[in-house]
Image (cartoon, rainbow, N blue to C red; front, side, top):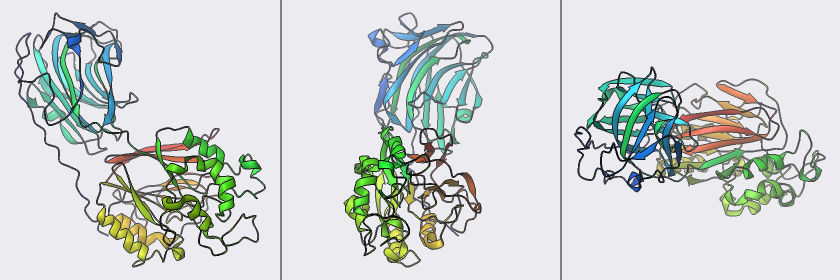
Length: 520
């Protein structure tokens, strides 16, 4: 089955400004203290103040006037074993930046390389770093893969060198480019590096690892790039709130194993980075009655109703229940309680499907109680709408969520969404999130027929919102991770060009799952 090509990511044009550097004096192009005019300045070193006040922290690095490339002041790292570095936390994270600096090697000793420039995430996790070996060779270490590469370039002592590191963080399609004294270093340059998917939030000059020996000068440190807002975080779970008549409701507090909607909701409230909540259907048992919403869902998950974009489940459409306690069912089976509670955020009550944008991602919400949406099959109004919506939003990254899974090991999978998943697959969608089975399960990327495909759709079943647990029956093909004992949320960081996931358990839960992926 062929897939439609997605709109390519924007091209990046790199302009290499040559700079010849003489002994003790930086001979650089006009405006060497400024970034390239084509990109905004995210940070400049501030050494001309005579202090490190522009930096966020560090130790051992000094601002002095004896070894200077430009102006009156520069920084110097002189160490025979102690850490000597300064770091700057950027005002906003970015997926692309260029760091340019003047570097003067006085001496290097010992047997270990000296890292003089590091790029980190906002939390401090190393992404990449430039180093000098004891033989004065320039190298680049990819801290995501752990691979260090030496170049043929020698960092001559006693002269100022013009060094630039340009990176784009984009999963396995990340870019590294090193420009040394005006020339690109091919050994350290790649457009197929793996730098992960977490944006850059911090830069560092000097070495924070003890035991290294070197004497280096730093000047004209400038960071340019496109600052971005923090990547949006989507929290997802379904099968959430117990009916108030449930014997385990316990005033909304639940019992040891049932009705944990409050403790799972507290996970969302405790994470200020969460920007949107995907409620994956069956959000209010037993039948989605409005009175039940007001008593059970609203005091728990309703606390972040303003950022919730729900999908409707089959239980919201139940008209009555003769065997299980049910509060305020809609006798017309139109999910009236659900649609009146969420209002416009739930989409058109006659359809239950809609889409929205979240950061650089396109998000699609579908209705898999198919008879209530005019069908889900090929040619149905929902399938035609989905294909049109995908065509109108040819973005790099797409996630869809709905209630009833196409794939699950919990026994409740259904082929009713096959045509919808086929449309998503053919358009290059990355992720599908579902509930219905009250378990957590992650699948490897696959095509709609369940065949492994590295460019396929990765699916999650997240029926862990608090109601109760079900069990696994027959393990489905391509199932990678499963748990049927833990309530919690799937936390998705939606990055430009990629995503990272973490299953966050309620307090006391030991099961966790995490990973990352790149958009097609």
